Image (cartoon, rainbow, N blue to C red; front, side, top):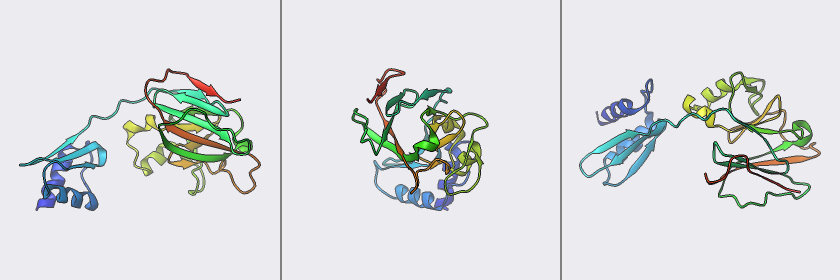
Length: 212
């Protein structure tokens, strides 16, 4: 009965259409309800549970605002600032020893690609309708919208996913999956490393730090 009550409470504050909390999260919530005051548990879809002395409180943060379309040419090698996401994209060649000079606050994601396949003109942008790629390990072509659904990325968050692309193709859904056509392999002659770092929001739009 307690589990059912907790699931109903979660459904009442979660986004429309979300009903099932799932076994693991239900058990964690049950443990929180039976514990001492001051504990907090983050649940799926932005729901937070807080244990107070006399009651358990469930709340949900408002969804993040959608990010407008953006596209920035990457400095290769060097650093490109993505102000919409508070990211800095660092690129360098392992064989040249080139590294970005600015110290990152935190690494979000990294990947290595075949530079001869990806080419010198790369862009950092967000999702557009009709986007597709060939996810590494899945085989074949997949619409990015379908990939987001499979990865359980909420619609409200999709504009905040960073994409690294050529003028025609996505090579990396940053932090989620590379495109199989551009991944560096044993026969790769030149490798380009791409790192996404979180930066502070005080960076001015369009700032770059080119390495020579």
